[in-house]
Image (cartoon, rainbow, N blue to C red; front, side, top):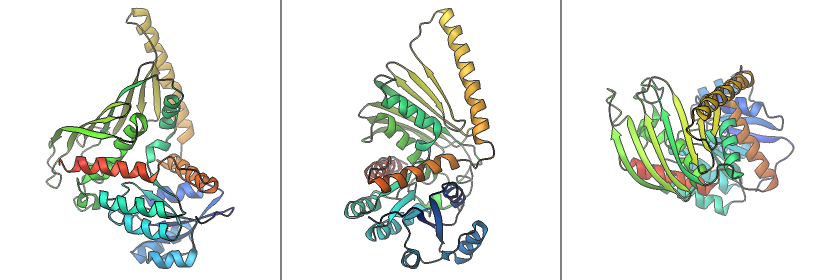
Length: 349
């Protein structure tokens, strides 16, 4: 594995919309520096590099690797290209951080998994919400045993009809198996993996429906039933909602968690009876905790780019794993299992 000096040399591959969040995140880390930007569109690469003060830009990936010898490659291209780029990096023992979806097929995921096993470098996938403040808190409670036995998880991911990817018929996501669902399903799957265990199994797709009028979307409503080592999970996805919403309810034998990922709030409910007094105290406590949490989030994230905090945490965690030769939170095997489940779901659609 390529060792890391005091300054971690990061090369960014892909100069699209998501690159902004990654560049901002890396620029907030004092021990990381973006040394090159690569995109097949040389003009776009030059424009973005100039905008962010990145010294070198390339249109050929291999040429960039030869020239700058980065410590970490951040792959931010559409998922159809992830496997080829990740495998080449791993064969050169360059550490890889790749955006989700990990790959566009299970066959490609297996190629990357095998390359990672033969490489001295490390690989992780950007499972964004796992590194948000509220999900980290929830997983900490689970790992401490505060929730008791996990009984199940309900998850809802709601999007508006004008969702930027779904509403654009020319967006690359529609070329994936499952279309827009194939692009976004890793999110609920990796969240369920984190609470119910990585080895999830798809039990069924009770609903795959269409309510909207976008001809390029075969389906815009989806319900899933999954089983993990620690319990059952249920997912509802819609592209017909009045507002974007990501809600996760985790049911434990000792506590119940209600996680609002977009608003970064977490409420926990311990044992209670149905007496009038308990219901009043519950309502007062919930209102107080929600108000405190909301105010803290406003102060914490004012002026920050959406998602930058969790992406910073991903880089910080990954660089630490490379320095100390430990496993990243999102391992290649976990990412492979996510692709397996997503592919099974997309086969229904």
